[in-house]
Length: 132
Length: 125
Image (tube, rainbow over all chains, first blue to last red; front, side, top):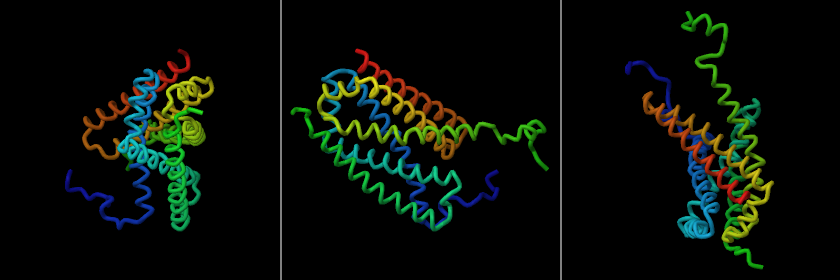
């Protein structure tokens, strides 16, 4: 069984940037799944009362907590933007080499801008204490 | 020569007949998540995250609670489908694959139920 010829796998191709974006879609999807679990933990802390919520926010606002949240924000935003690109492909459009390269650039630019926006909004919302 | 059974040929559904359903649900949940996630992130980040009272008051509103439940439920469903594909693609061995697929379902069911329960506690108590 092990002697059968196999179709070429990932390792045989030269790494192109559209290929990198494609792989990143899966990776960011898996990272976002971990983010979902953290989000549910945060919701449960909120439901558990003021002390549990204060503790959760203390962990999330620490430098490491913020760094992790930035990572999840990037992953979610990347998967969101590139997901739109994927669904456009599903309609049969934009599959030509030049088009796919162009939409890849659009996704990267959109991800950088949106991630910066969400990090800024997130830091503002974390610093805001709600006091007038 | 085809190895497909006569019944399989007539049904014309390939190996299992469920692939399209999985693929389609992934798209349905993806489309639903576009407006839901934009709304959720924008709404969440316009409130003071460090204020327990403010967050509770926000999530306690009926429409915020309903949309948040829809968001988390759809997110968990889409996430479950996606991780399923990754496990099927990369995990070798039938036992490990079946086991991990099961664990994946359990984790996502748990996450979905916990999130819905948390939102209900916040809005009903």
